Length: 183
Image (cartoon, rainbow, N blue to C red):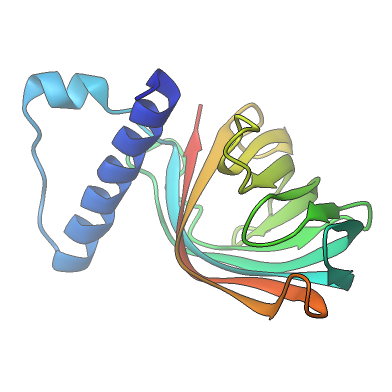
């Protein structure tokens, strides 16, 4: 297992513990060695998003547009306690290539509009190609709130509208996911 995968799994585990503790109203305590190994995120959120492909994605390169929402945000390290939710819009230059479920590549820029009225901009990549080295969603905040943070997202429940080779994929839908903002 590579260091990057172990680090991501550690962040996911930490986030799931934080979310579970928040929902259950309990506190968590990790052994010192485990606590030192876990990355301390600035923010964790649940997410829902939907990518639309026009024309349908069918082993080609097409325009991609996303509708997304971040909710139930919490700041484990206390650096962003006021950020609770955000609406996310992708730029018109966002593209998708390949097909879904694999190998899919979506690249673009997104604007995050936070509940506080503040904004963040991010460059992102979504990849399902295990040979790309960028599996999942990864992004970097390039401006605004949390500039310099990286974003990792883990879809929990994903679906697609359409099939490659039979008319193509019109949309990729994630109904529940976890997003981590790490500085």
